[in-house]
Image (tube, rainbow, N blue to C red; front, side, top):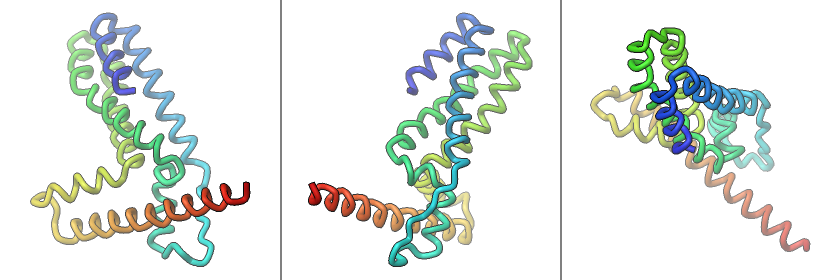
Length: 172
């Protein structure tokens, strides 16, 4: 998918107006799809109280990441590519006096950033923990706790999925 994003960026340099509409249509389609998928409430199946309150909250907060982990792993770098593409496109569109297009690409930079972080919270938390000097102790502790909670919820969710898969196979 990143290849498609970068192909559309090149197309924007060759045919700015047509390329812009192709790029923004592709980005808007992905963004709207993710937003619509996130609108459906993810009900946490907490039988036998296996998830604590923090884990339930994290699962609800990053519902798409927990519902569709493989799609999240594919789309998160795609949104990062959409975000990175704003770096050459905005100045180019400004140079070509295409101000509305530059503005929309700039807005898309912010939207893609938010969605990339929502689709892969582990990566964004690990990156923020890597920037030790930029975070104070309280922010570092919050990010570390949130990362641990995500890891714990993922382990429990994977164990539940494995058990249900084994249970289904044993019935057949």
